[in-house]
Length: 366
Image (tube, rainbow, N blue to C red; front, side):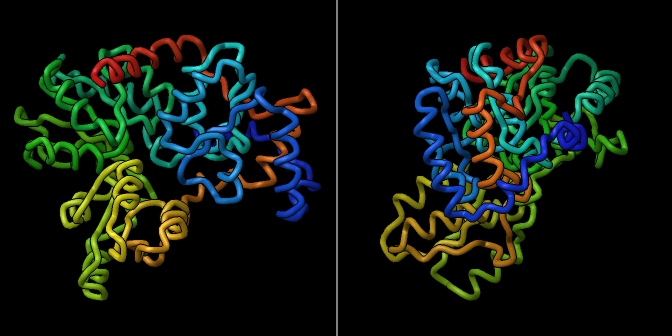
């Protein structure tokens, strides 16, 4: 479902929630959480607002949170504090009786919406004509359920920023080429890490329905032209500025940043990797971090013995991730307590069945 369709299905919350103070909403949130008890489970992604993440039963990346939700068999409702594709994954993995709720259905992911199933089906026809049966579709977990399902139907798998290298290696044992969806930067950075020459990776533009660059027989990785709107804003110039201002600074970035940023950084890895590096950093060390601002600020606050800054001083938090605010979250709890849950995310059975194939192939390599 695209953001436009998602918005149309969004229930408008009452003005009483919009107008209530933060203190009132926080108190009501804790009261409702205690009242609902084990009937609810609240996973919270690392990029969530502080006012919301405080209620999370667990914090983590999208796949880990979906797996934790699947293990909470006693919970009737999963209130996923993240974005739409994360709630979809949770719905795919949890029991059918369990309901997954996204407090604000407008909480989407621009990157995930850069690859629609209609675009992919058209691209696949073109690529099959060009390269024949030599391509395995692989999708980043940051994608819609329909994209995961397509990969599942065609022998492909999902991957995360933590296991992208292992999964790309596996894919190249299955077919001669990979179609990497939807983040071109993670695909390119991982390919380079595996020793694949940049010239052997080519970008597919789903809007123009054409390649950017030379797509010849040497092509090993076809990169979908998608990107994270947050991580693409970190630049090599940001790195140069940080090093000039602070010669002791170490640059730590997410692999969703572009190739030149990752190449010039001291460290690059998943959100979990970033947190682990900071957790084990020497006292007094200096860090410029290239990832979402809510997480950077939280790391800065929880590690006062370190000097932490954002790699880009002009960064703001992820706008769609921040759609889930305190009014929407507390309203969702109240709706469950009243027996009228809303904003339930439900993946059709046929889509879920094929998406599970892609997820299981990834887990089999773990």
